[in-house]
Image (cartoon, rainbow, N blue to C red):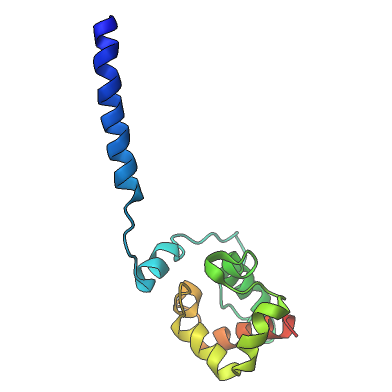
Length: 139
């Protein structure tokens, strides 16, 4: 029994060291790979709820619904460096660049944010309406 313990300790030490070395090696991940990794993999809708981008009564997009279903995961938590809704300090420099720059980022993606927040079904007008909504919250 004592002999087994003496052999097991060096083996465990070698295995643990190997795992630590393997885990500590950094692998560079591109922005595109990061965006793909954090993109939504599923969508949950309650029966009777309108899909993201659906028109509200009167034909206008339901901006709050789009924000809640597509954008809020990052823009309420600050995930992946997203500016939080209503954070004037974070939004100030972005707003100063002009709405066209904000529209461009939202439509085409920026850093970890995928184009149209990861929902290609949204129209450009829907995305722009949500950008306007976010900007209004930060003023």
